[in-house]
Image 1 (cartoon, rainbow, N blue to C red):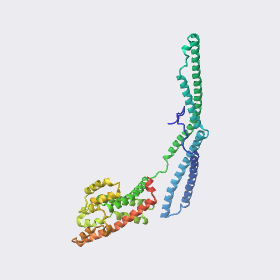
Image 2: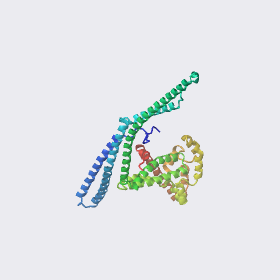
Image 3: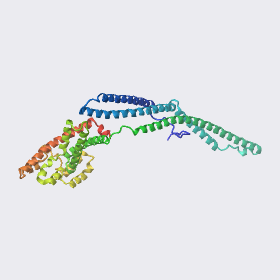
Image 4: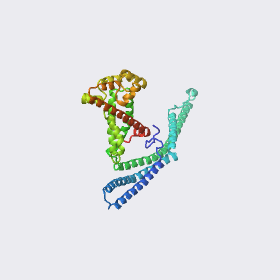
Length: 423
Protein backbone atom coordinates (compact mmCIF):
# COMPACT_ATOMS: atom_id res chain seq x y z
CA UNK A 1 0.00 0.00 0.00
CA UNK A 2 1.20 3.49 -0.78
CA UNK A 3 1.13 6.69 1.28
CA UNK A 4 -2.06 7.27 3.29
CA UNK A 5 -3.44 10.74 3.87
CA UNK A 6 -3.06 12.05 7.43
CA UNK A 7 -6.73 12.69 8.22
CA UNK A 8 -8.77 10.55 5.83
CA UNK A 9 -6.30 7.64 5.67
CA UNK A 10 -6.86 7.34 1.93
CA UNK A 11 -4.16 6.11 -0.41
CA UNK A 12 -2.65 9.09 -2.17
CA UNK A 13 -3.05 8.45 -5.89
CA UNK A 14 -5.03 9.85 -8.79
CA UNK A 15 -8.41 8.09 -9.03
CA UNK A 16 -9.11 6.14 -12.21
CA UNK A 17 -11.55 7.08 -14.94
CA UNK A 18 -12.07 9.82 -17.49
CA UNK A 19 -14.66 12.28 -16.25
CA UNK A 20 -15.09 13.97 -19.62
CA UNK A 21 -15.87 10.64 -21.32
CA UNK A 22 -18.34 9.66 -18.61
CA UNK A 23 -20.07 13.04 -18.76
CA UNK A 24 -20.23 12.78 -22.56
CA UNK A 25 -21.80 9.32 -22.25
CA UNK A 26 -24.35 10.83 -19.86
CA UNK A 27 -25.19 13.47 -22.50
CA UNK A 28 -25.64 10.71 -25.09
CA UNK A 29 -27.97 8.81 -22.76
CA UNK A 30 -30.07 11.94 -22.21
CA UNK A 31 -30.34 12.49 -25.97
CA UNK A 32 -31.24 8.83 -26.46
CA UNK A 33 -33.97 9.12 -23.83
CA UNK A 34 -35.48 12.02 -25.74
CA UNK A 35 -35.29 10.07 -29.00
CA UNK A 36 -36.95 7.02 -27.43
CA UNK A 37 -39.66 9.19 -25.94
CA UNK A 38 -40.28 10.68 -29.36
CA UNK A 39 -40.44 7.20 -30.90
CA UNK A 40 -43.01 6.15 -28.30
CA UNK A 41 -45.08 9.24 -29.13
CA UNK A 42 -44.90 8.33 -32.83
CA UNK A 43 -46.15 4.81 -32.15
CA UNK A 44 -48.90 6.27 -29.97
CA UNK A 45 -50.05 8.48 -32.85
CA UNK A 46 -49.99 5.50 -35.23
CA UNK A 47 -52.16 3.52 -32.83
CA UNK A 48 -54.56 6.41 -32.43
CA UNK A 49 -54.82 7.05 -36.17
CA UNK A 50 -55.46 3.36 -36.86
CA UNK A 51 -57.94 2.84 -34.03
CA UNK A 52 -60.88 2.50 -36.44
CA UNK A 53 -59.19 -0.12 -38.62
CA UNK A 54 -60.36 -3.72 -38.17
CA UNK A 55 -58.98 -7.15 -39.07
CA UNK A 56 -56.96 -9.96 -37.55
CA UNK A 57 -53.64 -8.68 -38.91
CA UNK A 58 -54.46 -5.16 -37.71
CA UNK A 59 -55.24 -6.45 -34.22
CA UNK A 60 -51.98 -8.41 -34.19
CA UNK A 61 -50.06 -5.36 -35.34
CA UNK A 62 -51.77 -3.21 -32.71
CA UNK A 63 -50.95 -5.75 -29.98
CA UNK A 64 -47.26 -5.86 -30.95
CA UNK A 65 -47.08 -2.07 -31.31
CA UNK A 66 -48.58 -1.54 -27.85
CA UNK A 67 -46.05 -3.94 -26.36
CA UNK A 68 -43.15 -2.24 -28.13
CA UNK A 69 -44.44 1.20 -27.19
CA UNK A 70 -44.60 0.34 -23.49
CA UNK A 71 -41.06 -1.04 -23.54
CA UNK A 72 -39.73 1.98 -25.45
CA UNK A 73 -41.48 4.33 -23.04
CA UNK A 74 -39.99 2.47 -20.06
CA UNK A 75 -36.53 2.58 -21.65
CA UNK A 76 -36.91 6.32 -22.26
CA UNK A 77 -37.88 6.86 -18.61
CA UNK A 78 -34.93 4.81 -17.36
CA UNK A 79 -32.45 6.55 -19.66
CA UNK A 80 -33.86 9.91 -18.68
CA UNK A 81 -33.02 9.08 -15.06
CA UNK A 82 -29.69 7.40 -15.82
CA UNK A 83 -28.27 10.17 -18.02
CA UNK A 84 -27.94 12.82 -15.28
CA UNK A 85 -26.32 10.24 -12.99
CA UNK A 86 -23.47 9.82 -15.45
CA UNK A 87 -23.35 13.54 -16.15
CA UNK A 88 -23.04 14.46 -12.47
CA UNK A 89 -20.53 11.75 -11.68
CA UNK A 90 -18.40 12.58 -14.70
CA UNK A 91 -18.36 16.25 -13.75
CA UNK A 92 -17.41 15.47 -10.13
CA UNK A 93 -14.71 13.04 -11.26
CA UNK A 94 -13.25 15.72 -13.53
CA UNK A 95 -13.22 18.21 -10.63
CA UNK A 96 -11.50 15.72 -8.34
CA UNK A 97 -8.88 14.78 -10.91
CA UNK A 98 -8.29 18.42 -11.73
CA UNK A 99 -7.17 18.97 -8.15
CA UNK A 100 -5.25 15.71 -7.95
CA UNK A 101 -3.43 16.10 -11.26
CA UNK A 102 -3.66 19.62 -12.67
CA UNK A 103 -3.15 21.33 -9.30
CA UNK A 104 -0.55 18.75 -8.29
CA UNK A 105 -2.28 17.83 -5.04
CA UNK A 106 -1.08 14.22 -5.34
CA UNK A 107 2.54 15.01 -6.22
CA UNK A 108 2.66 17.80 -3.61
CA UNK A 109 1.37 15.46 -0.92
CA UNK A 110 3.88 12.77 -1.92
CA UNK A 111 6.73 15.33 -1.83
CA UNK A 112 5.56 16.73 1.53
CA UNK A 113 5.40 13.22 2.97
CA UNK A 114 8.95 12.48 1.88
CA UNK A 115 10.17 15.80 3.36
CA UNK A 116 8.40 15.07 6.62
CA UNK A 117 9.92 11.61 6.80
CA UNK A 118 13.40 13.12 6.30
CA UNK A 119 12.78 15.76 8.98
CA UNK A 120 11.38 13.13 11.33
CA UNK A 121 14.45 10.99 10.78
CA UNK A 122 16.73 13.97 11.47
CA UNK A 123 14.85 14.75 14.67
CA UNK A 124 15.03 11.15 15.88
CA UNK A 125 18.74 11.08 15.03
CA UNK A 126 19.35 14.30 16.98
CA UNK A 127 17.50 12.86 19.96
CA UNK A 128 19.47 9.64 19.92
CA UNK A 129 22.86 11.31 19.44
CA UNK A 130 24.68 11.39 22.80
CA UNK A 131 25.91 14.68 24.28
CA UNK A 132 29.49 15.39 23.25
CA UNK A 133 30.91 15.91 26.73
CA UNK A 134 34.51 17.24 27.08
CA UNK A 135 37.35 14.99 28.20
CA UNK A 136 37.89 15.39 31.96
CA UNK A 137 41.65 15.00 31.46
CA UNK A 138 41.71 18.24 29.53
CA UNK A 139 40.39 20.09 32.59
CA UNK A 140 42.19 18.23 35.35
CA UNK A 141 43.47 21.46 36.93
CA UNK A 142 40.25 23.46 36.25
CA UNK A 143 37.10 21.82 37.75
CA UNK A 144 35.00 24.91 37.06
CA UNK A 145 36.14 24.95 33.45
CA UNK A 146 35.13 21.29 33.13
CA UNK A 147 31.69 22.07 34.49
CA UNK A 148 31.27 25.00 32.12
CA UNK A 149 32.34 22.85 29.16
CA UNK A 150 29.83 20.13 30.09
CA UNK A 151 27.04 22.73 30.34
CA UNK A 152 27.97 24.12 26.94
CA UNK A 153 27.92 20.63 25.39
CA UNK A 154 24.46 19.95 26.82
CA UNK A 155 23.20 23.28 25.52
CA UNK A 156 24.59 22.56 22.06
CA UNK A 157 22.90 19.16 22.03
CA UNK A 158 19.61 20.67 23.22
CA UNK A 159 19.73 23.37 20.57
CA UNK A 160 20.33 20.73 17.86
CA UNK A 161 17.32 18.72 19.10
CA UNK A 162 15.16 21.86 19.24
CA UNK A 163 16.20 22.86 15.72
CA UNK A 164 15.40 19.35 14.39
CA UNK A 165 12.06 19.37 16.26
CA UNK A 166 11.11 22.71 14.76
CA UNK A 167 12.00 21.50 11.27
CA UNK A 168 10.04 18.28 11.87
CA UNK A 169 6.96 20.16 13.06
CA UNK A 170 7.14 22.57 10.12
CA UNK A 171 7.45 19.65 7.70
CA UNK A 172 4.48 17.93 9.36
CA UNK A 173 2.37 21.06 9.01
CA UNK A 174 3.17 21.22 5.28
CA UNK A 175 2.45 17.50 4.93
CA UNK A 176 -0.87 17.82 6.75
CA UNK A 177 -1.87 20.80 4.58
CA UNK A 178 -1.02 18.97 1.36
CA UNK A 179 -2.76 15.82 2.65
CA UNK A 180 -5.93 17.76 3.47
CA UNK A 181 -6.04 19.20 -0.05
CA UNK A 182 -5.87 15.66 -1.43
CA UNK A 183 -8.54 14.49 1.01
CA UNK A 184 -10.83 17.24 -0.24
CA UNK A 185 -10.38 16.00 -3.81
CA UNK A 186 -10.90 12.40 -2.71
CA UNK A 187 -14.06 13.34 -0.80
CA UNK A 188 -15.43 15.07 -3.90
CA UNK A 189 -14.94 11.88 -5.90
CA UNK A 190 -16.12 9.51 -3.15
CA UNK A 191 -19.35 11.37 -2.44
CA UNK A 192 -20.11 11.58 -6.17
CA UNK A 193 -19.42 7.86 -6.59
CA UNK A 194 -21.66 6.89 -3.67
CA UNK A 195 -24.41 9.21 -4.93
CA UNK A 196 -24.19 7.73 -8.45
CA UNK A 197 -24.22 4.18 -7.11
CA UNK A 198 -27.23 4.87 -4.90
CA UNK A 199 -29.14 6.63 -7.67
CA UNK A 200 -28.36 3.95 -10.24
CA UNK A 201 -29.32 1.17 -7.82
CA UNK A 202 -32.65 2.92 -7.39
CA UNK A 203 -33.51 2.57 -11.09
CA UNK A 204 -32.05 -0.95 -11.48
CA UNK A 205 -35.21 -2.52 -10.02
CA UNK A 206 -37.30 -0.94 -12.77
CA UNK A 207 -35.05 -1.72 -15.72
CA UNK A 208 -36.02 -3.81 -18.72
CA UNK A 209 -35.43 -7.43 -17.82
CA UNK A 210 -34.96 -10.46 -20.02
CA UNK A 211 -37.50 -13.21 -19.48
CA UNK A 212 -36.47 -16.69 -18.40
CA UNK A 213 -36.78 -17.84 -22.00
CA UNK A 214 -34.63 -14.91 -23.18
CA UNK A 215 -31.88 -16.02 -20.81
CA UNK A 216 -32.39 -19.63 -21.88
CA UNK A 217 -31.97 -18.59 -25.54
CA UNK A 218 -28.40 -17.47 -24.84
CA UNK A 219 -27.61 -20.67 -22.94
CA UNK A 220 -29.03 -22.88 -25.69
CA UNK A 221 -27.09 -20.98 -28.35
CA UNK A 222 -23.88 -21.44 -26.34
CA UNK A 223 -24.59 -25.16 -25.82
CA UNK A 224 -25.36 -25.63 -29.52
CA UNK A 225 -22.05 -24.00 -30.37
CA UNK A 226 -20.23 -26.36 -28.00
CA UNK A 227 -22.16 -29.34 -29.37
CA UNK A 228 -21.08 -28.35 -32.87
CA UNK A 229 -17.43 -28.60 -31.86
CA UNK A 230 -17.97 -31.79 -29.86
CA UNK A 231 -19.98 -33.33 -32.69
CA UNK A 232 -17.17 -32.80 -35.19
CA UNK A 233 -14.63 -34.29 -32.76
CA UNK A 234 -16.86 -37.32 -32.09
CA UNK A 235 -17.42 -37.85 -35.81
CA UNK A 236 -13.65 -37.96 -36.38
CA UNK A 237 -13.15 -40.31 -33.41
CA UNK A 238 -15.94 -42.57 -34.67
CA UNK A 239 -14.12 -42.95 -37.97
CA UNK A 240 -10.69 -43.44 -36.41
CA UNK A 241 -11.24 -45.46 -33.21
CA UNK A 242 -14.97 -46.23 -33.00
CA UNK A 243 -16.34 -48.28 -30.13
CA UNK A 244 -19.47 -48.13 -27.96
CA UNK A 245 -18.24 -45.20 -25.83
CA UNK A 246 -17.93 -42.99 -28.91
CA UNK A 247 -21.25 -44.35 -30.23
CA UNK A 248 -23.05 -43.47 -26.97
CA UNK A 249 -21.43 -40.02 -26.91
CA UNK A 250 -22.48 -39.44 -30.51
CA UNK A 251 -26.05 -40.48 -29.71
CA UNK A 252 -26.20 -38.13 -26.71
CA UNK A 253 -24.81 -35.23 -28.76
CA UNK A 254 -27.27 -36.00 -31.57
CA UNK A 255 -30.28 -36.04 -29.24
CA UNK A 256 -29.18 -32.81 -27.52
CA UNK A 257 -28.59 -31.17 -30.90
CA UNK A 258 -32.08 -32.21 -32.04
CA UNK A 259 -33.68 -30.81 -28.88
CA UNK A 260 -31.67 -27.59 -29.21
CA UNK A 261 -32.57 -27.22 -32.91
CA UNK A 262 -36.28 -27.70 -32.17
CA UNK A 263 -36.10 -25.16 -29.33
CA UNK A 264 -34.30 -22.55 -31.44
CA UNK A 265 -36.78 -23.02 -34.29
CA UNK A 266 -39.67 -22.61 -31.87
CA UNK A 267 -38.12 -19.48 -30.37
CA UNK A 268 -37.25 -17.93 -33.71
CA UNK A 269 -39.27 -14.95 -34.87
CA UNK A 270 -42.60 -16.24 -36.10
CA UNK A 271 -42.04 -19.75 -34.72
CA UNK A 272 -41.41 -22.73 -36.99
CA UNK A 273 -40.98 -21.73 -40.61
CA UNK A 274 -39.74 -23.01 -43.93
CA UNK A 275 -36.19 -21.95 -43.08
CA UNK A 276 -36.24 -24.39 -40.16
CA UNK A 277 -37.00 -27.48 -42.27
CA UNK A 278 -33.42 -28.22 -43.32
CA UNK A 279 -31.74 -27.92 -39.87
CA UNK A 280 -34.55 -29.87 -38.19
CA UNK A 281 -34.45 -32.58 -40.87
CA UNK A 282 -30.67 -32.91 -40.51
CA UNK A 283 -30.98 -33.11 -36.72
CA UNK A 284 -33.74 -35.74 -36.93
CA UNK A 285 -31.85 -37.87 -39.43
CA UNK A 286 -28.79 -37.60 -37.19
CA UNK A 287 -30.49 -39.55 -34.38
CA UNK A 288 -32.60 -42.07 -36.33
CA UNK A 289 -30.93 -45.50 -35.82
CA UNK A 290 -30.86 -46.50 -39.48
CA UNK A 291 -27.87 -48.76 -38.97
CA UNK A 292 -29.71 -50.68 -36.27
CA UNK A 293 -32.91 -51.36 -38.22
CA UNK A 294 -31.66 -54.82 -39.17
CA UNK A 295 -30.92 -55.60 -35.52
CA UNK A 296 -34.41 -54.46 -34.55
CA UNK A 297 -35.83 -56.75 -37.26
CA UNK A 298 -33.78 -59.86 -36.48
CA UNK A 299 -33.05 -59.59 -32.75
CA UNK A 300 -35.98 -57.61 -31.40
CA UNK A 301 -36.20 -54.34 -29.54
CA UNK A 302 -33.44 -55.13 -27.05
CA UNK A 303 -30.93 -56.07 -29.75
CA UNK A 304 -31.86 -52.99 -31.77
CA UNK A 305 -31.39 -50.66 -28.81
CA UNK A 306 -28.02 -52.22 -27.96
CA UNK A 307 -26.94 -51.80 -31.57
CA UNK A 308 -28.15 -48.18 -31.53
CA UNK A 309 -25.77 -47.33 -28.67
CA UNK A 310 -22.87 -49.27 -30.22
CA UNK A 311 -23.31 -52.55 -28.32
CA UNK A 312 -24.40 -54.74 -31.20
CA UNK A 313 -24.12 -58.51 -31.21
CA UNK A 314 -20.57 -59.75 -31.56
CA UNK A 315 -19.17 -56.27 -30.99
CA UNK A 316 -17.02 -54.87 -28.25
CA UNK A 317 -18.59 -54.53 -24.80
CA UNK A 318 -18.71 -51.25 -22.93
CA UNK A 319 -16.28 -52.65 -20.34
CA UNK A 320 -13.81 -53.75 -23.02
CA UNK A 321 -13.99 -50.32 -24.63
CA UNK A 322 -13.42 -48.61 -21.27
CA UNK A 323 -10.36 -50.81 -20.72
CA UNK A 324 -9.10 -49.88 -24.20
CA UNK A 325 -9.40 -46.18 -23.42
CA UNK A 326 -7.64 -46.68 -20.10
CA UNK A 327 -4.72 -48.56 -21.66
CA UNK A 328 -4.31 -45.95 -24.40
CA UNK A 329 -4.59 -42.96 -22.03
CA UNK A 330 -0.79 -42.53 -21.55
CA UNK A 331 -0.46 -41.83 -25.30
CA UNK A 332 -3.15 -39.12 -25.51
CA UNK A 333 -0.60 -36.30 -25.74
CA UNK A 334 0.55 -37.86 -29.01
CA UNK A 335 -2.61 -38.13 -31.15
CA UNK A 336 -1.00 -40.31 -33.83
CA UNK A 337 0.39 -42.78 -31.30
CA UNK A 338 -2.87 -42.73 -29.31
CA UNK A 339 -4.95 -43.58 -32.40
CA UNK A 340 -2.51 -46.36 -33.29
CA UNK A 341 -2.74 -47.80 -29.78
CA UNK A 342 -6.54 -47.63 -29.76
CA UNK A 343 -6.78 -49.42 -33.10
CA UNK A 344 -4.21 -52.04 -32.17
CA UNK A 345 -6.29 -52.93 -29.10
CA UNK A 346 -9.42 -53.36 -31.25
CA UNK A 347 -8.61 -53.45 -35.00
CA UNK A 348 -12.26 -53.91 -35.92
CA UNK A 349 -13.44 -50.68 -34.33
CA UNK A 350 -13.78 -47.50 -36.35
CA UNK A 351 -14.08 -47.13 -40.11
CA UNK A 352 -10.42 -46.58 -40.98
CA UNK A 353 -9.62 -50.06 -42.22
CA UNK A 354 -8.33 -48.85 -45.55
CA UNK A 355 -9.40 -48.19 -49.10
CA UNK A 356 -12.71 -49.51 -50.38
CA UNK A 357 -13.71 -50.91 -46.99
CA UNK A 358 -13.73 -47.41 -45.48
CA UNK A 359 -15.86 -46.04 -48.33
CA UNK A 360 -18.21 -49.05 -48.21
CA UNK A 361 -18.69 -48.81 -44.46
CA UNK A 362 -19.28 -45.07 -44.50
CA UNK A 363 -21.75 -45.29 -47.38
CA UNK A 364 -23.68 -48.37 -46.28
CA UNK A 365 -23.10 -48.72 -42.57
CA UNK A 366 -21.73 -52.29 -42.82
CA UNK A 367 -18.32 -53.78 -43.44
CA UNK A 368 -17.55 -56.78 -45.73
CA UNK A 369 -18.26 -59.43 -43.10
CA UNK A 370 -21.57 -57.85 -42.14
CA UNK A 371 -22.57 -57.51 -45.79
CA UNK A 372 -21.83 -61.23 -46.31
CA UNK A 373 -23.87 -62.13 -43.23
CA UNK A 374 -26.85 -60.10 -44.46
CA UNK A 375 -26.78 -62.03 -47.74
CA UNK A 376 -27.00 -65.32 -45.85
CA UNK A 377 -30.08 -64.35 -43.80
CA UNK A 378 -32.99 -66.76 -44.16
CA UNK A 379 -35.84 -64.38 -45.00
CA UNK A 380 -36.36 -61.72 -47.55
CA UNK A 381 -37.90 -59.50 -44.85
CA UNK A 382 -34.72 -59.53 -42.79
CA UNK A 383 -32.62 -58.81 -45.88
CA UNK A 384 -34.96 -55.94 -46.75
CA UNK A 385 -34.63 -54.55 -43.21
CA UNK A 386 -30.85 -54.53 -43.42
CA UNK A 387 -30.96 -53.11 -46.94
CA UNK A 388 -33.26 -50.30 -45.81
CA UNK A 389 -31.01 -49.68 -42.84
CA UNK A 390 -28.01 -49.53 -45.16
CA UNK A 391 -29.66 -46.90 -47.35
CA UNK A 392 -30.74 -45.03 -44.24
CA UNK A 393 -27.22 -45.12 -42.84
CA UNK A 394 -25.96 -43.64 -46.09
CA UNK A 395 -28.45 -40.78 -45.77
CA UNK A 396 -27.61 -40.48 -42.06
CA UNK A 397 -23.89 -40.14 -42.79
CA UNK A 398 -24.51 -37.56 -45.50
CA UNK A 399 -26.77 -35.54 -43.17
CA UNK A 400 -24.30 -35.80 -40.28
CA UNK A 401 -21.43 -34.74 -42.50
CA UNK A 402 -23.42 -31.78 -43.82
CA UNK A 403 -24.47 -30.81 -40.31
CA UNK A 404 -20.91 -31.05 -39.04
CA UNK A 405 -19.54 -28.93 -41.89
CA UNK A 406 -22.32 -26.37 -41.47
CA UNK A 407 -21.70 -26.18 -37.70
CA UNK A 408 -17.96 -25.86 -38.21
CA UNK A 409 -18.50 -23.03 -40.69
CA UNK A 410 -20.78 -21.19 -38.24
CA UNK A 411 -18.15 -21.49 -35.52
CA UNK A 412 -15.40 -20.21 -37.80
CA UNK A 413 -17.50 -17.26 -38.98
CA UNK A 414 -19.02 -16.50 -35.56
CA UNK A 415 -16.76 -17.71 -32.73
CA UNK A 416 -18.34 -15.24 -30.29
CA UNK A 417 -21.24 -17.62 -29.64
CA UNK A 418 -18.73 -19.76 -27.70
CA UNK A 419 -16.10 -17.21 -26.69
CA UNK A 420 -18.62 -14.59 -25.51
CA UNK A 421 -21.90 -16.31 -24.52
CA UNK A 422 -24.97 -14.11 -23.89
CA UNK A 423 -26.48 -16.01 -20.97
